[in-house]
Length: 269
Length: 269
Image (cartoon, rainbow over all chains, first blue to last red; front, top):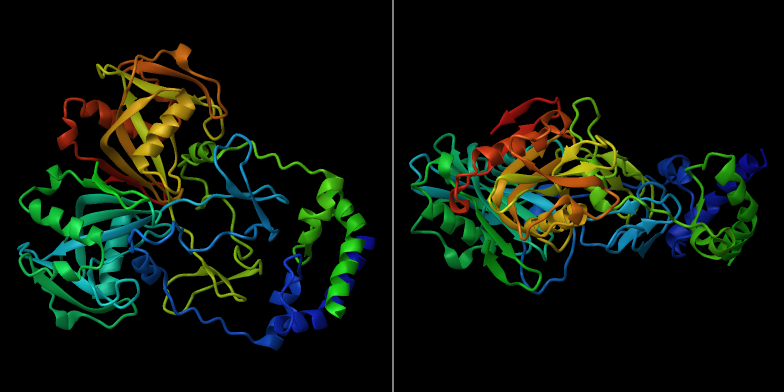
């Protein structure tokens, strides 16, 4: 009973405190009163959360595999607070583990970080003479040409993700074929699954619809590809391998596997 | 100044509170006093964070793909607090996005969740007559036979992960060959990359070393595999495909691609 009273008193007292530290005082990491934050106070503050960057556009941004950037994960930020209980995390090596993790000492949750999967496709016209590329609207490599690509989502297959990204970024409906390539970018903590795909219908640049991620989309003949204006090495790898295997039936296509190490070294596995 | 005093007073008062609610009272989600938790109080309470479950063992646990369990992600828990600023998260659809995410209204960080990659290998003796299996020490499917497997880590390739897991779980050094299979388990939010591998040296069960994840390891002839005692359908898929492609050279091996949908339906792509 004494405990409950104590909690209620805090709740009452924290209203002016909260409004003060919001504006003038750095938020102390040791004190957070979230019931207030999400309940009574929300209507007073009427804060609107504007999140203009979509997941897939961030994925496209993360196709950056330049050698100079530091190692990073999805959100390019360290994990500082426990997602389960909100306590501050510490870096330590859990018992039985072999590397350091962000660990919650309060609830013992280990916050693992793992590479993410990106799905992409090399989509060609039905006669396979032309390939669909889109021009990036976002950094890095904005203005340069790339493949439709984005993060694999919970609940979808990597092939569905490739189809979805093609539709979102170029407004092209594609039939996804066999796995064309697996590219692992250690520095970017990414593994890219690239599929061979075919346009379901005739498609022209007029079919393109404005979206947040691409400036335009078009079909390039294999001899017209703007190699000097491609966004990333992986795009060039995939296009070259797709072109060199145009004659290979889907059923016998062996994926190209390439790695780009943390130091920037590239090799074919 | 008033704010600082308030924080200090909480610090003082929370000592008995903390020791009480730890034992008798459910922790109110609205109240957390982390500076106490990780600072002054730590030495008095001498709370030791025991994290006996390693990442790879949890990965193995998550090879469970039974159709009855609900969709889940890495830690089988919803994200409740912002990992960057500690504020409580809300579920909403960010502008420009097409699905709900856990969003921080304070710092605008979107907490994306994505499928994780598991690396596994079907490791055979050099004459390819026997295959290396290990018996799970952990739930689910503890006591059943499986492949060496575990989560892909930041900074390693999926092939390195397969080699590492074989060493950790069976104490066998393996040479990792071509990609044998890609299995997507939508319900488990997993994508498994299974490699063909070969034992580097002669290996017998006597070489096995006790570890947290496996009870034993042994080499099975292809006709001795305990099909009824395999841990997961994916293990059976990989073993069958490995056996059926024993004669196929590494350079022409086409990976088997299978999906298990959220409803439990299995299909070969």
